[in-house]
Image (cartoon, rainbow, N blue to C red; front, side, top):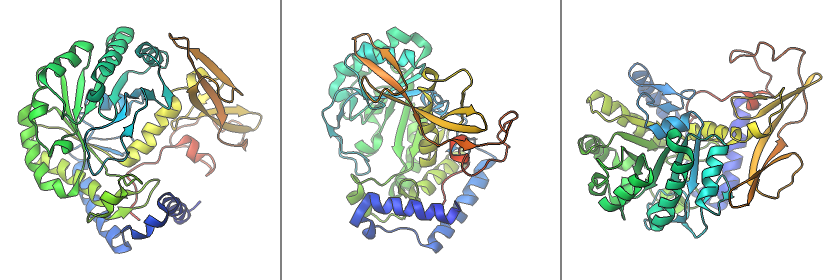
Length: 408
């Protein structure tokens, strides 16, 4: 498939996702894309000599990542959605945040904190985050799950939590730390970039991180906040690329944003804002590491990690786990790729591994083919490396693309 064919397929997918709303979105013109590419190239060239690029150049700046981000980059992170409700109304939020379900991770509901802790241990996670919704809306549930993971896994697991901070108090900070929380991440966009709640965690919870989208119209404010955050005790700033979803479409489409196509639709100005803020922090010598968490990073590396986590439970002695998170299985003159799908007990059970949790409930890891048998020459994988030329049909299962996404 050529690049033009791939882009056409992505545009068609974006059109299907947004339906008739698609025609009201302001996508980049060829001229706008060319101008944005030129600015990004200049920013990346400047940053190349001064910042750290990691994860196939999809993560900038990676020199001083928070412990949680490093765990994520290593592919050993589990995110537990402790609830699906939030008391804030951030315009950029990608989901509805009005669900009332119980704790959920990787599509699996967990009946007890001990069930989730056992899952973390069995799958070898070294990082766990508590997310939502807003975890402080169900504080006792949140504390119980943090404590259960800490009891079961000890210091082998780094535990962090996301919060908008509106309900945060010094007493809650102490309770979270006593339960075993090692890092807390504040979305200060929910509090109009006020740091007063964040300051209550400083000196109580070991690692203080701010994690927010890179909002283009807040760039000048964020330049000031970099200094204020560093002075307040913030140790890490994570900037996300803004993404358009059916939930936030009405909010984002009413702002002066330029949208770009891809596996999902993103905001062009958000990426440039993040890169400019990294440059500003380095130019001014502000002692606050800024990590740009791009959508390509999330799509490529977090998805690969999600695919990879169940593979040891279904891997045969001759099978190989690829960089993209698939199982490579060789047979006479052919290769076939499989994925591991982790589900609540039940499922298709065609080729599965059953795991029983402390409550007696179970989960299943199923082995599912994602490719047909593909002919390969004898010994093709004997001296296989990242520089080995790949046929087109193998590339999606073997290689993670390098660099940030094109603008089109």
